[in-house]
Length: 479
Image (cartoon, rainbow, N blue to C red):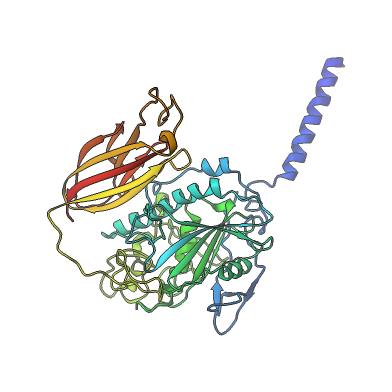
């Protein structure tokens, strides 16, 4: 045998051996263990009677008895026990709801609200500086999915997130103990000890952990009344890094919907495990061996709520239909516009789980909103939602460098400290509810343009990487 051929065969054999070892080390797609798919039942007690019957009781130290259907399993090819890098998370693809944004509702805190939380155990790296902006984006996608779902039945709904004075999502950053992320019960207990106990709050936790895909408390009870337990808190939902910003649907929205009362066991397409069987739908999947799935909706509907709107979410259910006579999440006080349930658009106290709908007052034909904020490299986007009537909206964006000496670097965009500074340039866009740009302009201050809009709620988005403060004045037809 030629010596070169013999050496080549040895090298090939070694390479094949290494590939075989690698294949053994990495489970093939679809061969992940239950633990790798997030099915961790530590701290959960199965109950066969009484409260939480047919569910798991979460052993919490205070507050109402906590129930869950258990952890939701992760995708077939996602190992939730592997930590995801910030770069991987930031590169996550988005679906048709990617154009949504967190809404500015009332004062941002009054009434029933969803509080976003970034939680990390003390023995793990705190990545809040990098993750919080991503959470703000994912929360916007959630809102977009909810509103697109409402539009399918001729309505409009938005999640009532807790927001800051500049209308950005308020994300509470919490450090847990080293064992605070080990179980859902530990997380709830520690958050409650830190004061997250309001009865008018649903707490959505982005846990920087590798235990679950997602898990949420379940609120049983299918009465259509506004006194349904789903209209009260505190309730908790948790999603770990493996399932943040998923490309098939939003696990964050799935878990939050559980706390809002989806999917009741009496629903027409119930799986018997608080999910639905008529896909595609953010809440539907075969959660048991005897569940038979049907597929009346396109795969693109996986991002949206309630395929055919007959199980848990419809803004205008037919008289006498299931959602007309049973619990309908579209009526939740944690959404704007919840019919007869105090959803409203703001106002109310922070306690008691209710909101107060303000008395309508006459509005002039033309009105003006003055919106202010600031941008930086770390926070390059600000968004504002306005409800307008049909007509022309005039936009005037005035801005200047902020901070000492103009807040920038000499000779760079947004810089100060000398005559060679380049004036900052910003972009202003007017976005439709589906995220598409209806009008846009880019340039230095003062940036002006007009847009013609039909009546509805739109988002004004200011974008720039310079350190600037700005004032946006929008003059429009009153709604």
